[in-house]
Image (tube, rainbow, N blue to C red; front, side, top):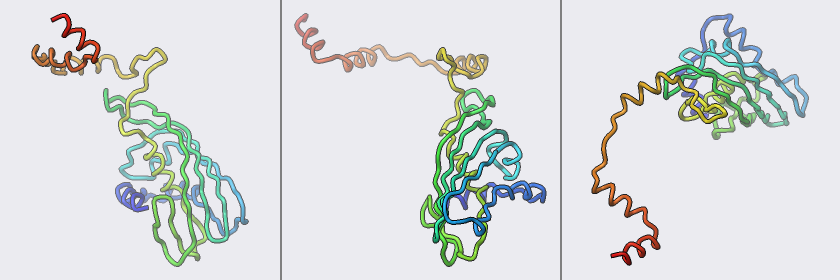
Length: 203
């Protein structure tokens, strides 16, 4: 996962020892696990995001249910993620809690050395005995965010954005008038074949 390496270079772990101790709960010691299925439940909260410097996320509460299928030569991790994180609205600039949910799969194979085969598969040395899920969960949470973070609408269809901010934005938005000639052409372009024939007959 080249993206993960680049992402973690941008958002390194905080160096304080008590932060590192917190992340130990996300480390799976797989050597002592039997072949078959295992489940791990994680609670991601504000303290989790504090572990990563320059993180775009700072607050949230997310439940991560991780199913591990351990085989002889590989491990298949399936992540079920559901919760909410605090983001900044790209429209009005105010913070709000964005619901996120989804499923991700990570395949970990055993080999000679660490390599990344594709976005969902990596190879780790066969001599390893543990695997840290924290950076992968961190990445999945960011990937589940939409391209633009916008306040959701309420049941009545009204924007959840700050009304005063929207009013100011509307006032600052330039309103250009359309040349009447272009408006006429625009209307002609919208005519159906039947409407065109009807107009010609009237002439």
